[in-house]
Image (cartoon, rainbow, N blue to C red; front, side):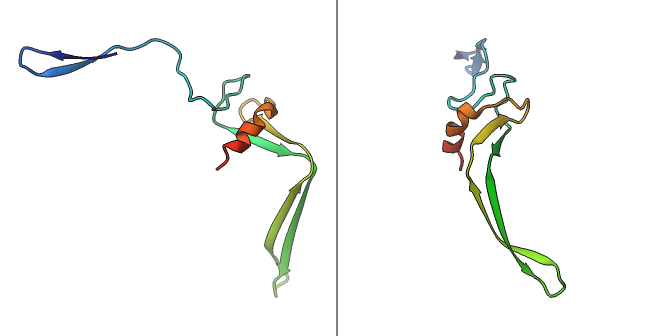
Length: 98
């Protein structure tokens, strides 16, 4: 709570009362129930086909030209702090990718 107080010199001062309680996170954030991490995550895709096209240079080396990936299996989400399986939150994770 913030209050304004007028002192004897006709100046206002601001007094702020601190409210005790837990620090909350914005709603919709994914939070690991195991360790509380809400920052670092990783995905693991199963049964993936990666196709990379290359061109061979005159000196015999190769330069990639394009990449294509197809995920045929399950994609899982994990906490990057404790490796807890967070796959139940994967749909929310995908919705929030920008």
